[in-house]
Length: 360
Image 1 (tube, rainbow, N blue to C red):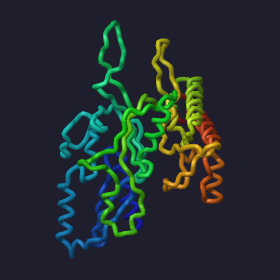
Image 2: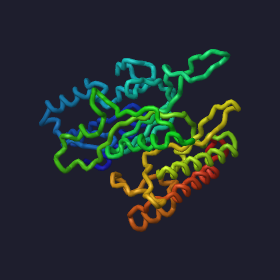
Image 3: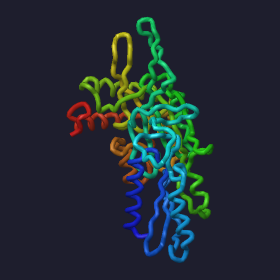
Image 4: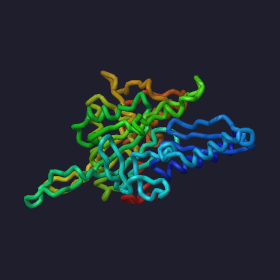
């Protein structure tokens, strides 16, 4: 396949994923020199079919075209467990209220919080949702009015070997202030089967499938938080970063290292008390978190990752980057490396923002 055609296909698939947040995978058809190819893009990468000559194999050609027109929304790659507004009417979705399903419960979507623009990888998306069936224990003038509770739903495609790691770690850290509380977890089911990247690669010849298997997973967590860059004043920024560092200290005392301290993983949540409302720092995203080797401050080496280093490149400790750059192998991550990343986050905010949410 021509390189320029490949570039176009990847660019179009990227645009579809970015515009349609409820896409599980994307099909693309391309014709060059009378040769038709089908390309599948999912969170494990891209798969290309063998070429079909549209004149020598007209029945196959018409079958592919008619199939692409009459396929169900599920087989086209849409996620039937997520209903979004402003979806074309011809898709005939059964609901119009934006919602997302987690297990046997359906949450109402208020807005998307974060969506990582990528074809391959975790493709993390976070949604601000509410559960109308759950009430806060709030008493106003002797009455207990109905107040929907707000949550965050994290939708991600995990490497199969680490699909439950974040859930297990959050359970270990559930009583630490400044750490998200896990409410519910679910391996997404589509048509009664686990939603993974595996079934779409069953027909590949033996030895040709080198992509990692990824599992579609959702976590419901609280509290809802806002980005650290939306601090209301300078002192609030400092206080929230200190809160996150204190949470990190408690996490380390439990034998866990975060390994991905970055701008997007430090948030602000609001704590409601009898004395008023206070902004607090929150440390999120434990996808790359790992246990600390006993008697040391170093992370246990993980054999289950397909990448040789983890973290957000811009905020990674200099020692890790230098080791990888010079020797091509990762350096064991330590507590000091995480603390160094906190410094880089603070410097980045000071250099790149005029004030709350006001990026230069």
